[in-house]
Image 1 (tube, rainbow over the protein chains, first blue to last red):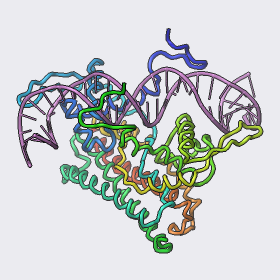
Image 2 (cartoon, protein in one colour):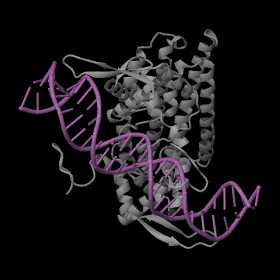
Image 3 (cartoon, rainbow over the protein chains, first blue to last red):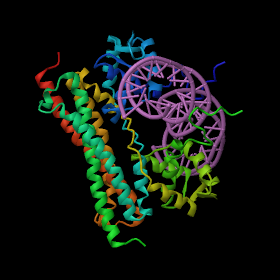
Image 4 (cartoon, helix red, strand yellow):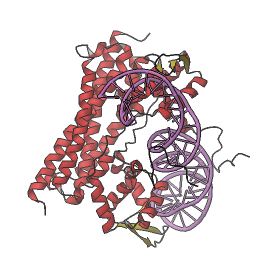
Length: 207
Length: 207
DNA sequence: TAAGTCATGTAATCGGTTACATGATTGC
DNA sequence: GCAATCATGTAACCGATTACATGACTTA
């Protein structure tokens, strides 16, 4: 017997909230608009530029691809290989494309950020300013490395008029620019924070 | 019988990766450095400014407080109330404070963002520029609202020399500034994106 | 011979959400 | 009478991670 319906809510199937939040399938569909990819290749993309705003491990991708195929949103095809394991590559179907285009225009709630580093910054008052400055510099270096990687990708678009980027590259270009601008904002904030921490280190030397 | 140890890894207890990632307990400890709070009050804080970089629902907070207390990192105290349900308030202990101060200086990996909105932007090439512009504007409005809320909080610090903020408010001030600067970066990006989309809408009118 | 890449998966677990329960008080 | 606020929890579920398994080929 199914669980008894709640006092104020009778439902059949998954909750609307869940249906509205399944970004993984759309991230995969989005990647497939650029062409045929295997699960393995999709996993690689999530480690690169796309990783700035979404990520998934291989173990999540393979079952999701199978689900998408069973729903007719993607079509799989086995590809025999020599010297490498055989693979299965997927193409987005017309239905998949329509499904994605619908979803793209639906409003998104503000992202619920979970930033471990900022949780630490929240308690910077507890530690010696000099130690905080060092921790900040460590994090800054990581962000600078990522910025350099994104700038290298951006160079591929260089010279082209941003307004005339081929349609297939419009989304990738816009999200890349978002990534670059957010990292630059972090660096500007880090400068400000360091100035404040230095002033405190000077006025209250380590005990 | 416990599961047989793997080929390359014998372990006892939770994995190191998990131990290094439990930010919720430290977010709670961080909130308690400002003074005694109940689980309910902590949940409220996660809905406000702290929510910019961490969040948790009440159902997660109550068990975590119990765990923190059993580990001696916080101390709970029952408070009888009239006209309201009784509550239990928690104070951070000396051990909890030391534990938090240690963690604050450990390096953090770059945050693995999951931004549903940017997943949509990735596929903006699929839709009419005019529809994309509208979707962008909707999201922009939400960000502007949040910015206004943060600016109101910032006003409380106004006039004070940022370098001379009381130590207890240093972390909160720095994270608030981070939130403000990230939203401003989003707005600057949204301007750029809108310009690009407008240029495309003009050159290729709706079919 | 050890580590790394290509390629796809299963099993156990965990962190977090949704739904629900309870119950007094205050405001519309 | 209905909804909202204050206050604390349990149970079921799900999305995601960790660990592990397999196996051929390449590079140091």
